[in-house]
Length: 66
Figure 1: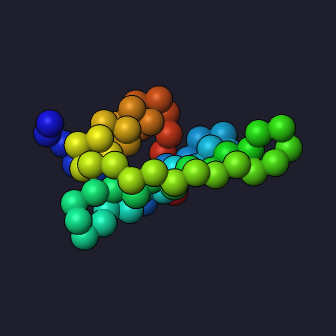
Figure 2: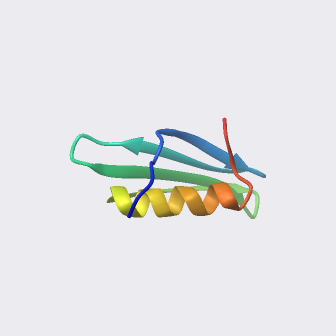
């Protein structure tokens, strides 16, 4: 897969995704959002290619870097 994944935060309507490129050529994605008046969060580690696909999907959905 071609493309680039950027380290940084994407945000839309209280949903925040933080992308961090790691030394082992993987991407750590931390996600936080509000659900039923509480803040939920989760973190996943994915390949560079998967990180590109996920980040691209959110950018195309209107998320922007903060």
